Length: 238
Ligand code: PGA
Image (cartoon, rainbow, N blue to C red; front, side, top):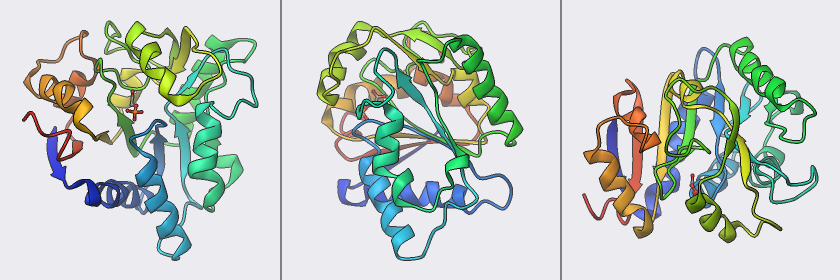
């Protein structure tokens, strides 16, 4: 894992540079996109680059990282709704190339298998962009997740549910669906984003850790092409 620290002002542009490189990749252009507070400035920057004619999503396949359970299909708090609002609807990404997890599927286990199949059929993930939770989770891969886990239904950790109140979900679900650690680790490149002082201690713990189930992000320490991009506040305990 390579650690890069930028000023908060530069963070969005540096993150967008990694996304842009994957979007312009000579081979497959399949990206995993997260939701949450952290990626929002990067999405605004990607939209600006698209509007300036510097970037096209026409060849991109976009895969959502995770999704809350129990929210209705038209709930604006769903991850897919936020991704559409913050990125997909604002760029030239073809609707047929938007892939997302559907927790309301009548056979959710089958939907998860299909999601893995869709990733494989597209040629695998070029770049997975993820955040890190205060408990070290990646997507909804909570502590205790296995490194061999694929896309699946998961119970949300108490800490995740606590933090979720900031997203104004109408109700806090007990479960969700997430791409697995194995799915993400198979990505050619991984970009982990962390900003703000509240992430400083988990970032320090991550960089002192050995890969372990207790800290799901720690499995990325040995990924051959993983960048941990931090703003100065998130790097303040290093
Ligand atoms: P955040 O969420 O970007 O809102 O901090 C990240 C996460 O919990 O995975």
